[in-house]
Image 1 (spheres, helix red, strand yellow):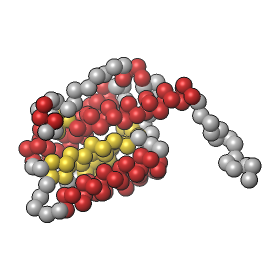
Image 2 (cartoon, one colour):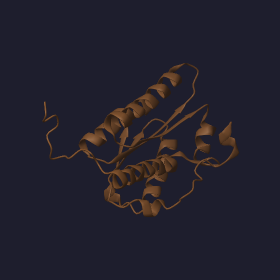
Image 3 (tube, rainbow, N blue to C red):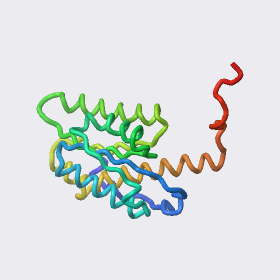
Image 4 (cartoon, rainbow, N blue to C red):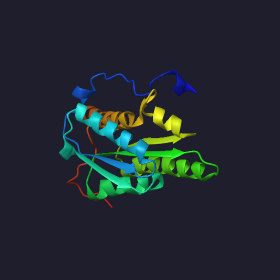
Length: 182
């Protein structure tokens, strides 16, 4: 497995600090299932955001019952808390039934769909491990912390959007009526 070769939270910081040019509100939705892991993921995500000068007022953290509910929790944060990006944090550990496969697939597909449909960066900080030891290793252990990685992912996506808007602008003028020619 590739993750056995390195700490997954090692990433080039290549100017992330200077790339974030405006104030954003970031949502974090955390699964209550396996909280001994998910709380460590959330703590790392918050620590990472604060490292990049996000204040506590810029961060909205909410809990949902399990990983399956992360998708709707993320949508709620976008709809009601008006966040600019969401970090989804969960931990699904393989059991004796196929439940693991269904949950992991549904959560991954749901988060991907929200990214596309809502045009909002939503990161996949959900551990899908074979056992608790693998989860521990990815929640601050020898393989880093997936919460930190998920926070960096949304920051990089926000930067990408900003840089594209600066470079190419937007064709959509919010004051114009859509389809006014029809």
